[in-house]
Length: 159
Length: 159
Length: 159
Image 1 (tube, rainbow over the protein chains, first blue to last red):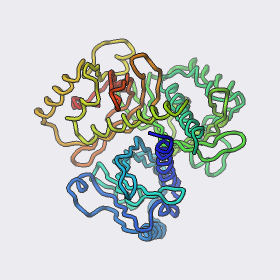
Image 2 (image 1 turned 45 degrees about the vertical axis):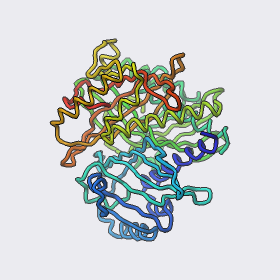
Image 3 (image 1 turned 180 degrees about the horizontal axis):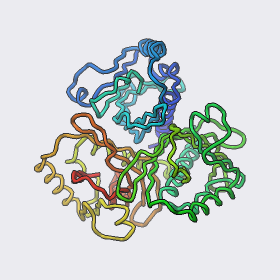
Image 4 (image 1 turned 180 degrees about the vertical axis):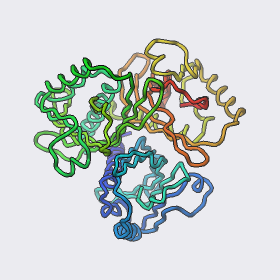
């Protein structure tokens, strides 16, 4: 591993930190900027993922679809206020494809309701393809693979 | 990012690892050493923090106040024995001020009681100003911002 | 810290990421490969560990014993399917012994049952001795120290 590989590794950690920082701050309008224009984004269960099922709880095939989702979320803002906290670790580079880096990361999300109640909301792993975009890195593919198939209806929220 | 920036980044990870290692080991007497002499330390809720409310559940404006708190905790040791486990990830450098580095980190704390019962005790983020102190880094400011406002009375314990 | 120290640090993160990735993928047949031939592996409670009690819930003194355990687990496969998710952070190098690196890491494991129910399964820390094995690192010693002494009988599963 040379200095360039080290730097790349730390840049990836930064990408994931910024990504979950954006979600936890409820700055959803900035969320699509983490993706390429023709990205693939999906939230699915481990069961579906392993069975090769193409469907997902959320599925988008472009950055514009992500923007539409955020708009819809903001208009439909009927749920009670809540906070999310993402823990992400470890992150690992699984491989280098010509198209970019294959990265996996374990995550855990805790949800806190207005009254202060905390719930273990979701655990799982990200299986991503990350590509260079100038100085930054972006998600060309992001698969959010949930360990549980018992999904809260509030899961319209990005993960 | 050059080697110096890489090293600095890893030193910060080390700082947070040592910090939570100290707390999880209940080595509270060493806890004030992670701070500068005229530090600012506060535990508050996200709600208060975002509203700009100056008060906190715990609030100290010097390392000596942190020492006093530890002494008080040790004397008042009336609660049943318990263990804490901090998970911290991701950590990110938000900016460089002349005074030091602005660092944020997500955390989650699990509490385990004597009888073995585990509870999701707290989640939130650290918003810190970290400064050089010789070979080490110290916290000049540490804000512990809790996602939940429903606070256990045992929160006299540092986070 | 020079480039070699930085690289070593990132290699250790990789080791832990691969280790828990193996467990979370239920690829237990690969699990013994993370250990040296004459390794020491133990799962114990913090209480026992601090009291210097040699016994553990799981205790193995060679890689072959780990392989036997995996075989036994596969044959006795009577429990309902479940998933585990390990979060590991922070990791810290506690010291350098002639024999290798002393490494500690905080972990948290969530278990998800077939019906989707998620449980905070275990928290604790790894106290490990990590040694070079060609290009890779391996565990010469791995102590899994659980915060809770209330152990699920399913803990036959490696952690």
